Length: 121
Length: 107
Image (cartoon, each protein chain N blue to C red):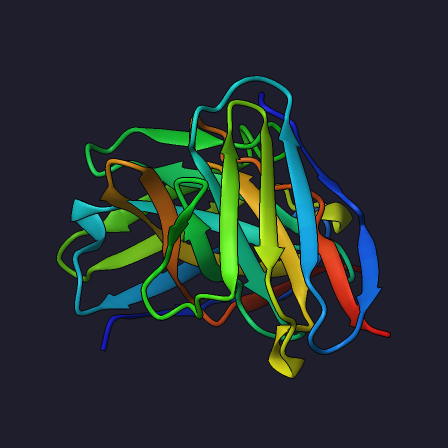
């Protein structure tokens, strides 16, 4: 079954660090665009970061310089290293496959179950 | 960055109603507009990609239209399982911005 399973969330103090993992099954992380999307409590979806199949990476302005997206091709796993965490980073974090479906473009067609990050003292 | 604006933010409707949600981009995104459905405590689900293409397995009561800056999601006849929050998202460029969401509630 094609799926994504996230892990690594938890409670961290402001200024701390956390690394999220997203393990993929039945497809290759390295052959696809992969995104992280977050959702603060009671709020909407916020795109966080993307890694292209070629390795280029991009970030939302809100996390640029603090978060790093990466992947391990052998483990078929996507990561999000989060440093200098702030209270406003508190959210459920989802990883998603950003698939080139056809000529009509990309869509996030496979999502993980989400992992909760709470930044609080 | 491209800003996505949805309207309304919420709506109340009854089972069987026709529902339309709109999404406007701050600049032209051609047809690169996706729609997602999210239920409480669950991950979003892709419904429509490329403005009007139905994702595999999605019921045909869902449809999308538009190009350029103005798009719509239509549910032709609301089913009980359609009460959820709907988000548009542009895939024209990075960052992949989302609209703020439209909550469809039971009247």
